[in-house]
Image 1 (spheres, rainbow, N blue to C red):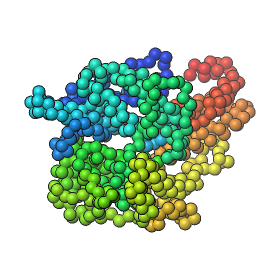
Image 2 (tube, one colour):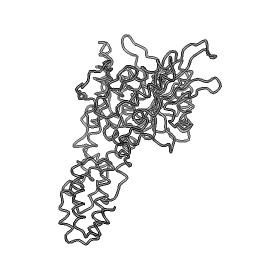
Image 3 (tube, rainbow, N blue to C red):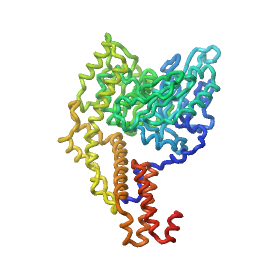
Image 4 (tube, one colour):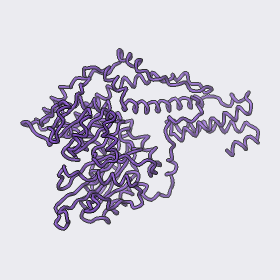
Length: 575
């Protein structure tokens, strides 16, 4: 690696400077949170149709509009009367221009990987209303208010919809325009800060965690600097679901579900409603936090989806994706998939939720197939019977659901961290030692990851044995998963940046002027150009180096230039 060559592995170009202007760009604050708000209605001639998109100048492609239309309505099998909330995730069209790249670098740099803005997908958060209405030909009023965003803030945006949707269904577009203008006054989403978000007389108070916080730890309380009226509604999390509620009927299989997510296995969740479908898929994805789930996942998926053919073909193995569906038609379509979770309405066995059973895939045949986890998968690790016992006892003691969720989330977090820790230790051993960093040489290479070498390290420094089982087999399978690939790419990019930082520090600590004394003008100009390039790249890629270090390097460059003949100085100052 040439120390002065630009490297793609450091990430894409930052355009943060473009937004750092004094005049606010119209809808810039709005677009830091949302892409747009859509209203989807049922048209007798067209079926589902977008009635309104706000702001009006937001450009959605026809393919994106069609997807939003179909994903914003429960299918006819769900029988959702009244108000229903759920979410979806859709692939954005290739080549579309994006409105948020200016803020992306600073936000994603500080946010945990699981909460970063998406490059290639939109999240949709839906508030659907279906009520009897004699004035409509079909006899029912059917409409969805949809918030589209690149941020995976399910809890925040569903809370927002609970405030604005009922009002919108009464007052229509003027109300929506007011709401969007209010959102355009919100502070920018900054990880680590307590943010007050006013809308329609309500103030929602949220805090986005930072990537350096211990996951699951208590957030640092920030002092209240103003007496807000009305008093804010504090949301404990922008994204976390009620994990316990989502997993009530599969508690005894949590270990299996965690492994399936860790390994990025193809999974279909068949649920009685889009709400259960979307919440279950999002809960599954969250089980491996702080690891990012790197496969595709669709909290709600329909036969009209543009990826339907791609995901249901039988000519190749099922892709690494989790699909949430409600249409019984999918039972036949997905018979070749290796893992199918069939959920129904929650049933009780005495005072405990009835647990679904693991069943053979061959039994998945009819449209009225019973609830169960249809798979031939055998877990590498044993169940944590103490955890299951504690949760079931909590139900009998009527322990609050949020406490049960906290117990379950803490267990999954510790298990994931225990699994990742040996990998992190091994990665550190691949870094070149700091003493090998010379300002006069190309930085030493990061050693290549060797699976066999890593396996040998497990004998001395394996995972903390939270659970017994075949950890080695689990690692070998993990190495073939998209989650390992995504994790390793991210960590390698961070390590490359660390090497760049160490090399910059070595250059700044060196006496560059003395080095130039016996060098030719060509060599000195070459050094200046390379140092400038290194400086530019450090700023462009926002390398984690102190500003004073970069200022010192800038000063060194100027000192070297001033030691050159005047004609060369003039030439270099022009560049």
